[in-house]
Image 1 (tube, rainbow, N blue to C red):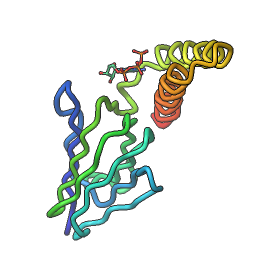
Image 2 (cartoon, rainbow, N blue to C red; image 1 turned 30 degrees about the vertical axis):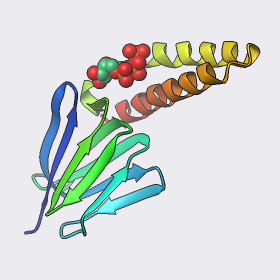
Image 3 (cartoon, rainbow, N blue to C red; image 1 turned 180 degrees about the vertical axis):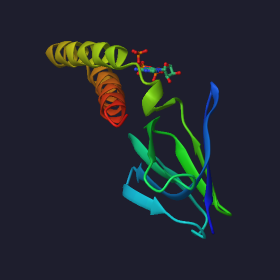
Length: 139
Ligand code: ATP
């Protein structure tokens, strides 16, 4: 059976390495599904979830919260390189909830001070936190 090898690498090292039948990710242009024998591509990823249907289970899907980065597909190997990425089971939900509240406060303050740089940073932090919270619900 044809399959994919999926690696997710961050500055902390390899956070994921499994065989898959299909991978669904969100690029900055929208969702993309990758099957074996896909043409080579390199695409930027959104801060979103990556879904991996593994070869070793008919039912199980792994969910990974990816903090942007890039995805390369070549010769049935999918390499995702991101600043951070966590599997659903590794997400500390209360930390993500705290990060979400902090980001919401920062957004409010940045709007009051018309600070566009701070607003951009806080909005990205909010997306990271919401993504982690969403992915953690798939356990
Ligand atoms: P925080 O404000 O809670 O640090 P952050 O979005 O600023 O969140 P990052 O800079 O994206 O955090 O990540 C720093 C490190 O902490 C990375 O290794 C990332 O995987 C990890 N990390 C961040 N938040 C969580 C979480 N809620 N659960 C597990 N690991 C997390």
